[in-house]
Amino acid sequence: MGQDASSTAQPPQQPPEVTIPTVPPETYLLHTTLAPRPKLILIGDSITELGSSHAQGWGTSLAIRYNRRMDVINRGMNGYNSRWGAAVLPLILEEILGPTASPLVSVGDGEYIEIDSDDRTAANASCPSSVNIHELLTDDTQSKSFVEKQGRRTRHPKYTFLIGFGANDSCLPDGPHSRNHVHIKEYTNNLMRIIRMIQTWNAKETAVALMTPPPCDTELQSPSRDNENVTRLYAEACIQVASAMSIPVVDLWNGMQLPIAKNKDGQDGDSSHLYKSRQHWKGDYLSDGLHLTAMGNYRLYELVIDVLDRSDKVEANGNLGLGLSVATLARTYPDHSMIDATHPQKTFDNGSL
Image 1 (cartoon, rainbow, N blue to C red):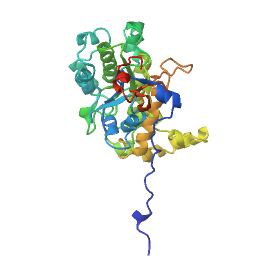
Image 2: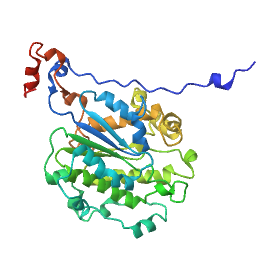
Image 3: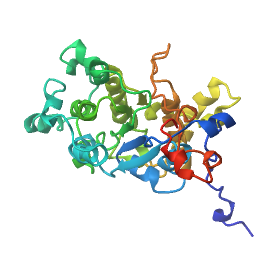
Image 4: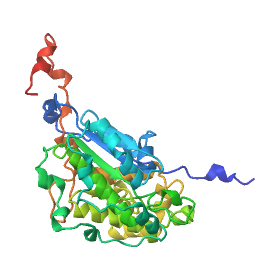
């Protein structure tokens, strides 16, 4: 009697366990602070929203990693594109940062190109093509980060924003999800607008990074999405915006076509190449051709922490990070072993902690 197919099916591959990175004992005990905990704010579409909806989500993993050092706030909104993200952003900023000190009208004044409704209608009537970001910047000074022009922020920003739109913007304009489509030129403008809005709201206490749309499985997502011919272009545009505005970027489109880092140990370059060329990432990382499996969430988590851990000074290879490694962030509040058991309030009145 033959075995039932379901009884021989292999269980889904499980990602490695997420843990808090270890630090030297002295650092663990003494590197503490009474200051408010910094915040990492995730803003994006369903890739972001679902990242905190289950135990293996990438947002959940970040919260575990930064436990007691940095709060992770998820403001992902399924179905949103960059246009709707830019529209709702003032509400998010007011909720988290408080009222702005600068009038929002100044955000778009000479800082980015506004696309009016007629231009938008015309743009959405055709499939996207690649875009030169520098054509959208009216002069070289606009390619400098807002922080460079307004003054350096503190070593660790109080608020770090990770912006991830593009998976819905890149829906095909003649497909079943055409209402989510945003032309690539407007997408580029929207990303610049979002960055400027955050930096104008509170320049010295904030940091911003972008996250490209992840790759999708064209076969499963057809006729809504086309990974190589469309999604790739949006990812490249996102990377160009980050470079032009001197901010870090998490390259999901390329990075999520490679094996997770722990699986690359001891492998040569050909192994990663074969993983991509044989498209193993589609089955490992994508549940429906777009959204992420547990392994996909872990791979995204790896790519995000690579940028979070990397120095916020430009490296020799041109890479830029956020300088938020666990080892450099103080734990909030003193370790229990350091509290004066008889007069505990003295411990918390000590401003030197």
